[in-house]
Length: 625
Image (cartoon, rainbow, N blue to C red):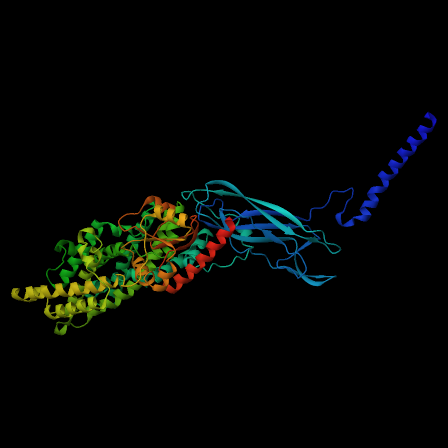
């Protein structure tokens, strides 16, 4: 038995050695596509993820880039791919804290494949872009985003089986108080992201992008243009009659001096506007809220009434002769007075916010560059002041015309009525003068009555005469006539700012209660941040939210109106990043911000926005399921 065992063992060892030597060769011959060999397999593709910000704040938009490196000699199918081929595709995760836009794939290069002909492919290095929004309720702290990249690698001879590669991207979520900076700009320059068509982002996106991208010349140009656009909105209408009145009644010597006075007047607006802008952006206050201070409104109204009475000839505003002589050596009291009135006008203009101003204020608030912020505000206000340079220049020409027939007194009296009307317009929002607002109406009978008061008042006030030139017994009649004319003019101006009779929204005035109700009832939410001193806010109430089609569309929403007239809620200001008014925010029941508007939009545009909000809400709900 033992003699027969040894040969068997020897034969077994020989067989095992033979199999060991032969099997790798046969395996390699049977499975060439998988390249089993003594060498390590070559990596066909690698991918790395990046984001456009070093830190991301809740509610902030940002961009994601997936940079794909493809090994030399290999390629992957483009997206979209030729029919029958597997495209390179990023699979986005289902996450409750992020919403994604349309994935941006690069355009592939055309390659002539022997089996199927021409097809688009990627090779070397490509960058895939994904726009994203971090939702408002995202917890603070580091997190990761895990995505999948599916691809099929091929070379000139073969195609491997489709594979999936994991891409992990770290995201640092920080509070609104921290500053976020643009990073990886070279990488994102290779991605052709679509230009946002969001109505609320027009203007702001360009300025914010120019500031963050370091293109200061473009930022200044856009800010200047934004100021010009703002000057054409109802927000600055109250300054027009004031400007005309000041320069129309000023003793000018010609167009050149009128122009210089207008420039000085606008510089007063610009300096005040710039200082206010930097101050409120640095402190986190709401720009324009200075006009909610009753002392400020009272001071401005007192100046306007005083100026109006002087135009009626009740008294003359003159500086002491010694000071007048000194001022004459440097250009006269007119320039000092123009600059002084300009500073007052700057306070009046403070509520005139727009997309450009919101972007600038946000930039000042999130950076330490107050000097640059000042000059950006200066440029914005200068753009807004161009209108007043034109108005002041040509209004001043009126005083250069011959004064025959007392027609100049007519102009001065009308200018006085306009200025005092503006004083009442500002006073109506002060609590002490609440009756001035309570009787205003937006109706034809009301305007007809107001028009009658103006006509009777102008007839009684003897516009061709001034108080200083008429007997004392006639002054009572003139004063009564001017009072009627001012009252009628105020009723017309103030009545136009009141909502017309008709359908209206069911506003809720408590933000926490409204959000809780929306959550319980699974309803969309619209937050309207407004103030009585905000012209665009009033326009939204009177021209947009009063339209039946908008009222019907928002019937199933929880509509919340938050009053920032007297003072702003610091918690709400930081929570919703309120820098100026108006601000309208649409949210879903889970408090995810779907849309933000920072300017007046008419009913037609608002309808489009609401439809877009509802589409986003459905998409967000699908992502969270």
